[in-house]
Amino acid sequence: MSGERGARAWRSLIGSGTVLVLLLSLLWQGAWAQGYAGLGTGAEGFALPRPGVALDFPRDHGPHPDYRIEWWYLTATLRGADGRDYGVQWTLFRSALAPGAAEGWHSPQIWMGHAAVTSADRHRFAERIARGGIGQAGVTAQPFAAFIDDWQMSATGDGISNLRLTARGAEFAYDLQLSTEGPLVEHGAAGYSVKSRDGHASYYYSQPAYAVQGTLSLPEGPVAVTGQGWLDREWSSQPLSADQSGWDWFSLAFDSGARMMAFRLRDSRGDFTAATWVAADGSARALPDGAFRAEPLVWTEVAGRRVPTRWRLHLPAEGLEAEVAALNPQSWMGTSFAYWEGPVTVTGSHAGRGYLEMTGYE
Image (cartoon, rainbow, N blue to C red):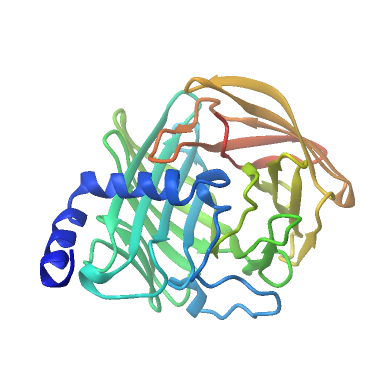
């Protein structure tokens, strides 16, 4: 099939939401068959991260179409006027069928959004899927704005220092305002974050210090909330090795004012770990493979599988010996590729709150 006839057929197919889901399924289960969600599949034709490349702002707040996978990932731990604890997630993923940008129906980009509101007794989530190039989803760097359908993460000033965040699902909505209380943090070696012993890597930075206020709209009524937010930005084309089956990722804000990002990637050769410790003054220190350890303590039956929902964390370089427990152990994101994501509490040598993401548990 070629020429205008083929283009018309492609436009007809790709305009269907059902076919978008099919394409994503083929992409993740076929073309991305290695590693969790195929993130260990070879990246021929796509750009790969290189060490020594300085991140450039505000440009890098925007999309990188020469790379295969990218996300804008906001989580927040909140306290409601009703006295209850809540967690909020807002994520926009960009996945490329081919490298490079193009307009209209020629765009090779697929966008997916996830949103959730979590309390101790309920986990509500929603998903959106969109074509790139036709105005249904996208990101601009300056002024910063990320959107899919009517979900938005948009700047209310320069850069990403002040944001408005909105999303809605069948049983929830939220409208939140975020303002920074600290500097951006570049993970790894100045934003070059290694993910495996084979040297696979991503570009990765965070804004871990937002003050958050706004309103959750729930079936029982609106709830005013305040709390802390954390934005992760990451892009790559092959961030994992083929035998890495999933990860456990922690973003924690301690009562002392310090913060920590840490992850372990699981594979047949043993865990690969990394961490970034952010002091109360915003200064950050990257810690290498092996400096951080995470030990599952309690496993919970979640969506037909066993998932660790209480952990013991060790980071001797910072005197951290703490336990992390899920606010709601049933925080399962039953989306097109499923995973666990929810707020956690921290006790032990350091007390605080944060978020935990776990993938690859079957």
